[in-house]
Amino acid sequence: MIGFLTSAMENKEKVMIYYMDSEGNVSQRVIRVVDINDNKMLVYCYYRKQVRSFKMDGILSCGPLKRSAS
Image (cartoon, rainbow, N blue to C red):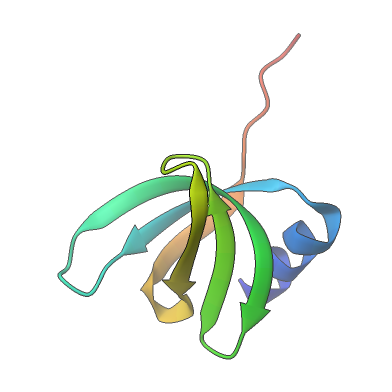
């Protein structure tokens, strides 16, 4: 997972993540990774439209954003 997120950060690609917060709430987010440090990831969250910080151990899964056919 860290390799995928690092690659997405280097290529400035949007990523879909499923995240569980400290209260056990699960959310789906579209993000762009800005920085990865220790156990935290700084991202631009397209849902909140602002820079957010996520704990790496809270990420349940991640993958590429599906592109629509044009």
